Image (cartoon, rainbow, N blue to C red; front, side):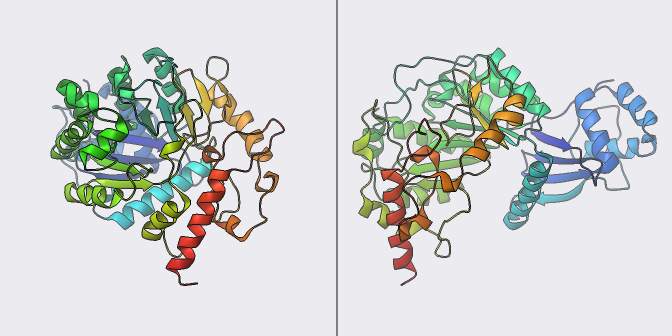
Length: 443
């Protein structure tokens, strides 16, 4: 007798020293979070990995869990966590804890924070990004991706990476590019992520989802945690000029609306460049009108091969942007230049290079030659021990340095001797941030 798990369930189970097991479960259809503790977590984890009632029954008997099995399965069925005609949907005791709606934003943030702390304490790999290809169906003027690189991740490669990431405790997988939807194995890879009960995030320009309505429907039916779409303006002459493709805005808007009609979470990202300065204000209004998440930034990534320097904002433009967006109580200084990149997340490039995160272009190895486990246990530790704040050359000489992001993605390359180069882009950004911060706080 087989049990099925609905396609909208995402789940992660962790073994902990204090609590033998804890499972975080997300009902992606209804945006409700649940937590299972102890023996119920152990039982749930076996259920989703077996899906055979006889095996589940034997497991429960061997582990002294037979007494709770029937009611536990009844609650799971009543809450639509499992599909099984032979199990009655009845229970008297509640095993699923902390049923929390996404509408309770503060509680959700707290729960995600607790989950992150747990992942950190267990040294789990929390996030994985798969960049499936470098190629794209747009021709953006600000593009920082390399040109004339045609590496493309295959399904078998992605499957092997995902399988290992699962053993390291991964919680969510993001799929990006280039433009990931033009990878021939995109949908197959996305389906495999969800078959592992992992949260799926998709970063796309939405063009192919407009052209291929069946692909759009398939994505909706996968219940992704979010689909991130870039909008540079709601004015087509601006957006389409920046993307280099006429009609690209209309396609993106159509897809965003269709996703929201299906109750799919959408994050709209509006990065500011010289071509669309100030457009984030109108884009945010549009995002709010549809109940979309909104992401904005003004960071510029220079790529000399693509000659994209004209897209960069001036220092005064950056200051004006921060004046309207920054947290007035946040100087932005950190104790270390690095976050947890490589410790709790990786990005795998189309050629299988392993980077610490999507914002740190530093190759830790290539998956053809080294596993994620090896990188996590050796190379990453060496990286974080080596690149410390005090190793930055020509820094900490000015008052604006405390406002610096210290992010390697925006600082250019790493020098051969192991030090980060001083970055004009980061220095300019820090100066603009400081000016906006001081103006906003009337200092």
